[in-house]
Image (cartoon, rainbow, N blue to C red):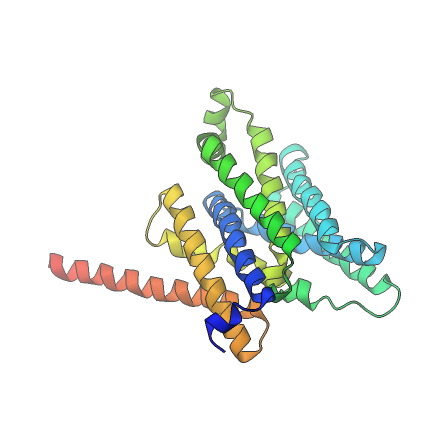
Length: 277
């Protein structure tokens, strides 16, 4: 089945749109995560979202909505514990990471009736993306674009030099909490793509690849979006062809793109060294 034939199916069109908007959101937030070195924080929030999914399944409400609320509170909790309570950030992350996973597993097993299939939440299945998921990702992408266009300098000042940002009378604490909120929302709304287990990769691997070619913040975002979307399309096609969960192949293709880019950069560097001799 070729690409044109796949476009005739609504689920595949939904998957493409979901991939596009998720790539935009993850490209923006992922770049911020990489430059702020918040990868471990993002991993903690991602796995803590399991608590919200478990509560949602047990209470009979939308698991993604429950995960969203749980993740936002977890993100705020990490920031509050590390900045206000004198607890090391890595300790706060590990605590909420473990707590969220434990709560999720407890409530999943307490859910009456048949045990729910949580593999889609753990490993993702982009072919199950709904129109509501697409709408939410589109809104998130639009909001992130507006926020970073209007407040890019304030965000970067706070990210790189909070003391200098305070001398400029910037609300450093408020900006940090807002960014933690956006990280949590982006993580939860992207769970259907690759799942909790693999989600961290789409927030870091495209950005790592982009960083091989540029250190400019805006260019990194642009390249991250393009690389992320290309990886999603390749992963989708491979998953349909081989009948393997899409999340696995999306991450596989993202990492493959990074490795190829890394080889290209190394060859260019060696070529320049040879010319200079």
